[in-house]
Length: 417
Image (cartoon, rainbow, N blue to C red; front, side, top):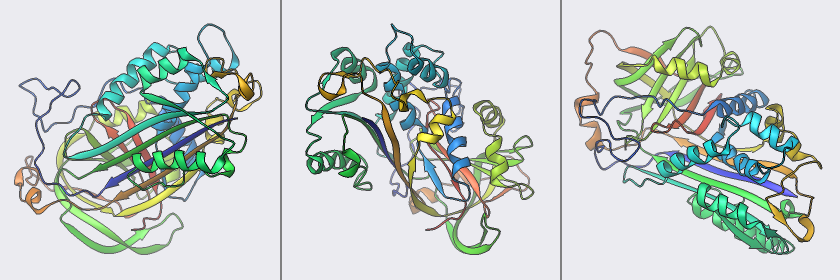
């Protein structure tokens, strides 16, 4: 039995004590004539899978608060594509190649994740990103050396042997590693019961913590129109300043970009107009649509009002992945010849569960020192500020601005804080 587990946490509540540095590094070096405050959407996004998965999960969980890490799921499925091998055509390999966004070439996958993982490993005082991948195998299983070399070198994944017959010790070991990566926010990704009959376990964990480049400087309580049609008082945060913004006729929604300190990550919020609901927006989601609409964003003064929110999500992603066209990995016909050999794994490996536990916290926190910097609080363009008041359900995603990787996507139907 093969189990895929994912643990991801996003926090937006760290205190900011420094101003943003200028662009730097191999992904962010800007020519001298480029305004370092400008946002330039990445051109090579490879996020077709991300939006298809998000759409599938959002459809299955209507009226719920959801946070998902498409990047984590994509990485583990890519490891399975590597395990399916390239020398023999199989249904397993064909399905993975058709759904994953690499033009049927795992060379593209290696290049993509090299860029993404290099970016995620970039250290800064302005944000914290922990990202780790492990393959746990039963002590009687011998991982194929070629496969372990591929995942260690190209995907920075570690391999560790455990005695899965000792379910308690194995669960403690796995959960301890996940707890470390997520800074203590996820402590029980796996249970003793979930490890029964386990042979191989692929685990990815991610933790993100960032501070708004310019904090929200006011909080208040006001009604939020939930997906149930009822208005209930919620805690909101507010600021007026320059943001990248676009009113999308195609999506019938407003799009707002809120950058984090450090000039590497941003949250995008897509707010449906009052004459449509969040379900209609979800049906319009696609990589091409989002890319086209984001390219039209321009920096203008915006009066931004968002609810504070925090919630946890536990998702079983088997059905969502199957609906994308990846089915054979769950069947007895699954073909993963490079994954492992020996012991009980010989010809018997298939995916039993894809489980993701996620959490997110979004609030107004920053520092008074940064709010005293007036450069982003001035209307450079004249006229009245655009209104972006998220007092009804909305969609969000957190993106690495330098690579286009979708760390998180989610929907907020009933904000709680």
